Image 1 (cartoon, helix red, strand yellow):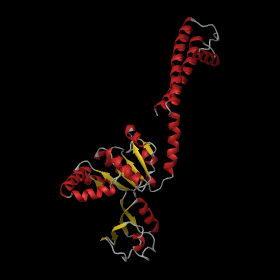
Image 2 (spheres, one colour):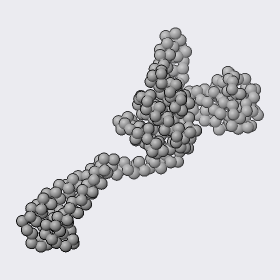
Image 3 (cartoon, one colour):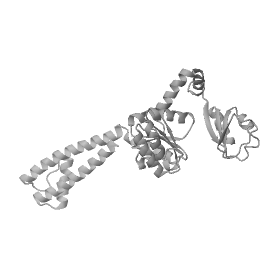
Image 4 (cartoon, helix red, strand yellow):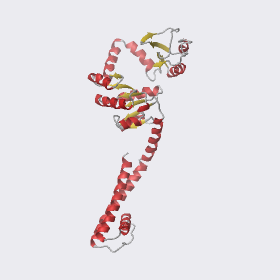
Length: 323
């Protein structure tokens, strides 16, 4: 942080002036090291004590320069320290320390790299579905919109910054940087730190999709292409689009389509009636590499199968506990 750096810089300059003043009196006046240091201190402090020893003409000129330097440095130091407290830098340090502690406790969370327009939608959905996530970006203005959330400010292509976000423990990473080149570099860096992490990347150009997949992205999303398909849907199937909007958009509904992996070996006894009893709609059952749409209530479900479910966040959480 800038103010903190200014304080360190001011301290360094003050020490340098003390050394220079001490050496100056030793060389010009031939005094002992202690007398020279003492004279330098009382001169910089402008306390008005008398001279340690009578000064020569050259010594007085040197003292004038030293006094002027001391006043400037002290004023700068006071200004930096005042800014440190007035601008809330100390509070920022404590908040950052607390945030880093919270991030260190996360497991299988998501790292959102990029807090721009696409990143904002990702963050909103993760928030609405109660996922743990960390936002990483170096744009302070963009991050200011997400106060209260876990944030790491820095270059997302820097391995150290990703480590601060707990990427080695994360379950997934969203590469939503403005350019495809940055996303590719981010993916390569993330893969080096955590080879097992799932990465979903944004692609600006169609030609970059293959490169992003080769770099290590599990899936590549093209916002431009999706936007075009949405426009066509609005034209040729408006009722279907409106139906989904009413269910999924905030303010009109809180339904979500979720994928849940079956882990409980007892889930097949009873079969899907137990899940349907929660009130959610089982859209499909992914089993043995195939999909069964609208599976019957007596369908056999085994650990490792995946259920595609539509329901409220509360219903989905209830089902997760049972499977």
